[in-house]
Length: 153
Image (cartoon, rainbow, N blue to C red; front, side):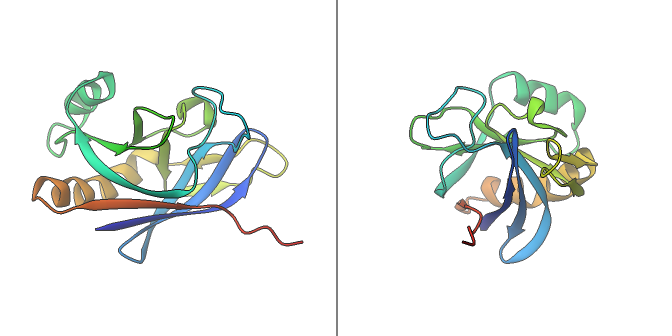
């Protein structure tokens, strides 16, 4: 399975994107902003292709196991990101919820005049999580590619 995050807008505090699953639009995304020098918990990961696994430890895993007992198999974990650890895909609405992770949502608000925001994160998560988690649980390799926004000069 191929996940693709197309970052389309980067503001002072957040980055907005679109998540595609096997080439089909799935939901909107929100991450921290781009920084030349990493600030832990305040910087988006570098553009690139990374493997996604299920993580069955840590506070997000245990909270989601209780919150979504009917679907939860482990938290979606983006691994082998240089100089980053514990990059997860989870629910949240603003850059305060991300700490470098990828948030999913049903809609987004521009981060041009204010910090970016996504809404209805739980709805989006409950829709995309089972597809991804089931693929991993069934032994399929899942990859996520982050593409930076195009700069027009």
